Image (cartoon, rainbow, N blue to C red; front, side):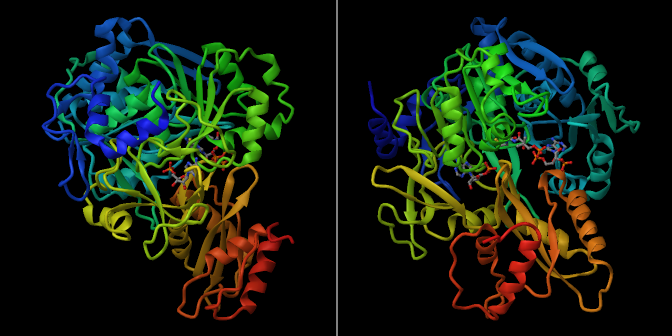
Length: 631
Ligand code: COA
Ligand code: AMP
């Protein structure tokens, strides 16, 4: 058997042979001129000259090779008490019909379609329908507010939006249509059509001539066929948080993405066609794109769309029920889900009620898996628990334990080793290689492997500035950490304003922009403080304009509402405090990192450049009033 080391070395020294062979597992309409174009700008490109259709590979191909009756999607919704199974043949029919609807409404190859949907199978159908006709989808997570949706409409400039009447959160129905209408009103770019899947929990008001009912349109549609697209054509745009309020539109291409997705299923997760694979995430996040929709279907697996939570729908045994009922082989989720389960069922009593013998292993990502959570999950499940590290920008694991190649020893707190194609290095600020065990900026030497972003939508310059300009020839991950003597990676923190709340990537800069917009606010800082359940939680420290003498509680309530209204409930912005001043360096830079250390009670040094150390005492008192900085 070939070892991880041999495979990894080949992928770095001879990437064209490595990925050329991996690509053979897919159907190509036209083969590539060459596997890798190193001269392409801003970054090298995979499979130039090739033509492919991602939907054909994920759906039609399996019907044609005899998997038509196999279940492609299991919809399991404890929140609506519903279940539905869709076979590959049914999926093909539904996707072709909905692709026909999109074509009728004017979508053509290269056009953008925004999908704003909860965890219902129609979300996957809409994504695949776009892929079928070469339209570029951009899925927006349902927990974002109208304003965020409007920002994405203005950036992606879609002609069609696909949505539904509502999403359902525990205890409340989230009506989507008012949010959509508000977003379309706010956006400068005008959308020509909006297709809505009606759900019984809410009725959407329809605007004649712009809004269309999914069911009646799909029933009347002429099914559309798969069209050839260039391997380098975009399959989707997925917006993710950056340093500012303007999210980054990560582009994913068709060819490289399909190859990496397909390769990862066997080699990282160790699954075969026909296996049941469950990523308990949301289609609005990258994990949902890659491992709820594309990778499991490209591999011919059965994927699960779960509309529920790890706890409360109805209890902390929810995940175990789904695993045993549907014979799930691999569960992939965020550590925060396990912390939520552990909190409610520390002794694993609910686990004992279910037969989990079908389950092979658990994969975690989205945030660093703290060793306590890893130990608990491993002890209770008695299966390998694999932390793996990746980003929206890459679409798949940069570091993982490749169970399909060989199971490497697990070091709790480390996502193990670099995956094939990722030449991960640790650099000092000046660009020198850091010795083993020493922290630095984590970078990936170009070329990035297939599936990684070729650019940001409509903004090559931002792509270059944000990722490529700090160290020439390297992609800057935005994470800091180190490599140990065994080449294991340790991902310790972000180097920018991104925080991770319940596995969701959020920008503190974006929250600061919203707070600064409040008429009473002079300046503010939002920091991510440690949280036992969600990993991090945002916390705002706000300085008021002089002369403002309204009650502080009123202003704080307004600030919290403002972030919820403008970014969305997913921002989880619930704590803020008014302070007289913010600690700064003499050059005026706010000392956010120092405030985080004080809040989290971690060791910190008085910054040599601090303007006025006394301000830190005031900040500490404010943090203590919110329950932080206790020691
Ligand atoms: N539509 C509308 N609102 C949404 C939403 C959606 N799709 N998703 C979340 N929200 C809301 C929640 O209802 C909550 O609102 P509230 O402030 O009124 O309670 C808020 O956004 C924050 O959501 P979240 O941070 O997810 O907290 P939670 O308390 O609802 O759930 C967990 C906490 C840990 C159970 C949940 O985050 C979870 O299961 N996470 C792990 C899986 C995952 O999604 N990982 C993503 C990457 S792999
Ligand atoms: P996202 O783009 O939402 O997937 O978030 C990517 C970021 O989440 C990474 O840059 C890391 O900061 C963090 N992250 C994701 N997975 C891990 C992990 N396994 N360990 C540490 N950090 C992680």
